[in-house]
Image (cartoon, rainbow, N blue to C red):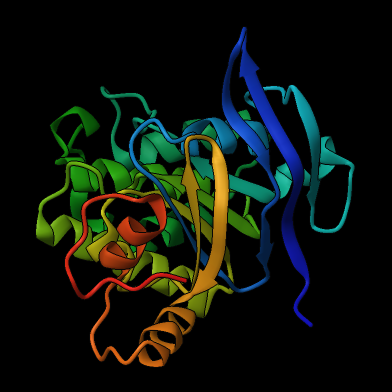
Length: 251
């Protein structure tokens, strides 16, 4: 049995009388690329903010790496939430150096390896404010990797990217997972792209986690219903009661 990296039980977040995350019980195992899917406003970002300590739950529990010591274990998480944060007037290496110092780290060789890893070695003296959106996303991921995290959490990392940028992020996520053995939680509403690299999924709808499954589960259910063709978008829409084509399958 694989180790549990992140587990929540009945995690809930309310703002006044509005429930944004509603009793979510999620389990992410070591080695997963967990695709966290839902429409805009479904509660993905709020859930992530609670998991990494940027928001306090109204109720429920979080465990990281089989521990309830969240303060200690959150040091083993790398996170990119919403817009990438860095110093626009600095180069990629200057940004990495600055963020490393904030963590009490100083290892130029390690930082150079991170630049190589995310494909920004040749940016030289170019200021980050002149980077493309895809380059900014890759730099943000490099910053998240400074502390050698065991879990990487990415919130909508391909949002706004062109196909080439999406491919670069996808290949980087796969490389981190397969070569560096980093477990990844990635939220997205771009399901066609997510289906190319995720290994497990969770669907959140109106704040509720309505299902966790693998891609193999989708195919098994579609074949059981006499269907030969099913994709993640069809399945997602069938589960949330959205508009779907005739190939979609139900549970």
